[in-house]
Image 1 (cartoon, rainbow, N blue to C red):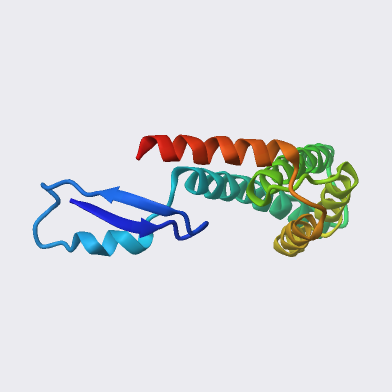
Image 2 (image 1 turned 45 degrees about the vertical axis):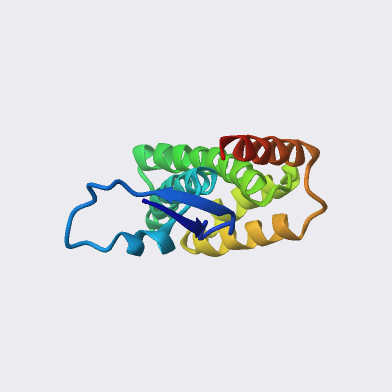
Amino acid sequence: MKHEAKCKICGKVLVLTIADDYPTGRDPLKLVPMATCNPCFDLHERRVKIETQIKKFCHILHVLAEKDQLTETEGKAVRTATEAVAMLAGKYSVWCGDALRRPATGQGVKFLADALARYPERWWFHLADFEASVNRSGLESPEHQAAESEYHRECREDR
């Protein structure tokens, strides 16, 4: 059975093919509102992975920041977590660039990494603020415009 649906993230029109042997007793039309195109799902999955890792390292930084005295091992853990947060801030900026089709500035990435290291308990706020600042930034990057036109051309050929 074929059903027309819209991607719940980007709104692109999709054609769902639901197998004829779909389990009886279940309504296949309940799948239609959950439809997501592959690029949107991949972006969402990447975001969840990056945010989970950032949350984990920020939790380590937060717990160790509350201690008065750090042992040598805990000091190494703080340095490692700080480096990991900086690397993940870079990955998050790439994700923002891909998802929002706007390039993030190097200065913004450094600011995000610094904010996450200084105030790790507010990691969610820093990520949302960074995403909003990228979204407010200039026009779409030419690379994303070219990639999107190529993707839509391939979609038209698939129909």
